[in-house]
Length: 83
Image (cartoon, rainbow, N blue to C red; front, side, top):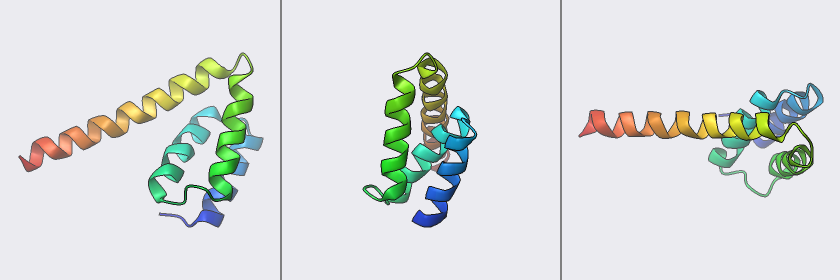
């Protein structure tokens, strides 16, 4: 897992590239990392707030939903294997 400075740099690159999929993956990674409240989380929140005001909100929401479903499915499969 990357540290907060690396996560922030990766997030900035994704934001500049306007790569909604990469941003959505990084948002989940940042939240999972325990660095909530640091620069990376603030950047992610600002980006999401701005994107949600535009017509690009649908791709962002779909990407976030897909990432959350992917993680949920992986967790459920891991729980099924351990049971």
